[in-house]
Image (cartoon, rainbow, N blue to C red; front, top):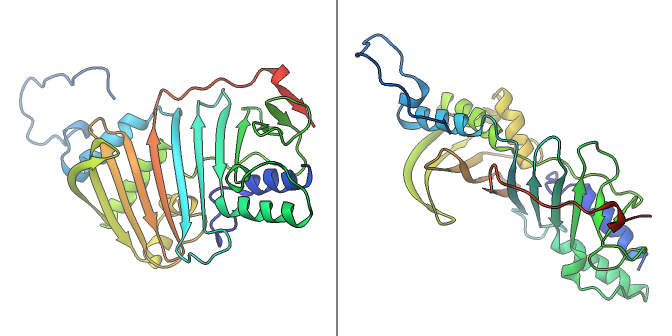
Length: 285
């Protein structure tokens, strides 16, 4: 993706598509105490306000390595050559393959123009040329790429071994990384808890705030997380908005700086699943 310094969609998308133009909760309620203890600190589940919300989020996502994430990035400068991109990550867990569908509208237009200038016709629209689906196996190696448009040889639904195509980068944020980020932002008084509201049809509590560029640079581990979401170091102040549902699961995150606006939407946490192609469905190029 060529959004300035913000490669959310990863160079794997360009590597896969450019050659295309040339080749045609807790398990139970807490036990009641036998009596009040005036000096005891509250347990995580007894905390209220923002600290309690973050602790509930941490508990709900502690063992979560299965989720679907829709990630969108748009350059603040709409005149940028590659002004927007989106990825859908379907993550099944460390021992199972992941599926990533990446879309970059401007790239599809460029590839189509290139085909037309050279007299080649892949029989595909710019929209079709802008999107690619890859399957990344847990042992790494060359990604398996969808051949749903029939542009690659072999006559199979999937291909492998496309020159220049690398596995896409991992998701910019996993559910378990959100609580440590919010905890550090809260410790620095950079975010506050707002009222619950509906987002994507779900009742969720909003946490929002803003950090100056210098404040982001002074963060600890959270700085790395923020830069991972933005695709690079912060450019100017960074705004945060995070929605957490009644079960303590993340629903949506929006963040932005002077260069890019990013939206992340989580779904199917703990239930993401898909069928990987059989060996006979994959043609090695």
